[in-house]
Image (tube, rainbow, N blue to C red):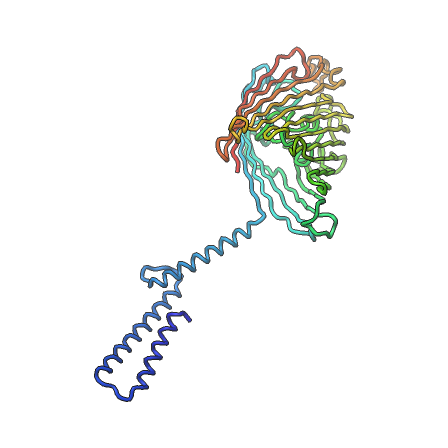
Length: 477
């Protein structure tokens, strides 16, 4: 019962007691009693009006002031409860989105015959991570990524490295900007030892199953693995033997079904190390046809520590074998081959805003156009010139032509059209230089002028150097 209603009843009872206790009532007292009765009736009517107003969910300017205040408090309370329930339902869900646009231009002699010397493309990515439930004391997560884009980018003439613009992405029809389900995998983190106290665990297993970009988990590099913000040429984004060389065996868009298992040990922090193994569909298996028949298998040992007065560094060594690589990808023939190789990826901070990196890859078996690749570079943070959100990146690349390609490049006619595919005798190595400057305009927008220099493209020492100038814009949240 509302407090004001209780007060009204108390007044009425007090009046009745006074009437019953008075032995004789004079004229003045009768007037007082009638006034009291009217007051009681008015209070009862006011009480009835308040109760009627409270039964309505709407606030009206005709409501008494106390009722309006009570309703306002109730609405505020319900709104806060609704927001709390919404936040609780979204807990553990993360969403990210980015849009990248790149414009590039090169000399006519640098691009393939019949292609344009300038190109524009865009690429959009949306990723969602959802809680994947628990199995015992192991936690699961679901990761999905959607990608869309248009524009194939520049097609360079005879280059070994594949593309000067790794952001280029489009479906088979260049007029189609439909989205593609790029990745969809489940990850389970299992603390070790099994059944132990999770908060105290310094070891765990990671298991990933689904449609995966293998480079998310292998050949990573803190300074050179994100073409949307760092180096654009794919020789600096991944190990080129796995990427443009074709040994990863992924589908046309860079993804494949597979499984990865990793053991992570952090018992001696700040030292950390892990060992991981991935098995992925290759060749036709990347398209879900006999996915694990002669798959792409890669194993990696990763070691992280703090050097140079506590600065982070990570060192990775890996080996791979692919049972369904085609030599045609390297323009020798159409036979399916087994390829194998090994590589290393290193990144190390050596200053407050300076990170150096290096990659090396070495082919051990199979017909390939290039059998060794070395890239070195660094990224300087803008704090050195009072622009903390900016960065300057510089990288050099060396891609060595294989002995088999050198022997056959002058006469090779893989398409059997009667004309040599290359028409020159390959020697030495293709050499690359890339420089970018990333300017942060605000928290969601970055602009990056980019310059690339390609020397001895395809190992042809008679070919002119190629210069590619570009501008990248990225917005993200």
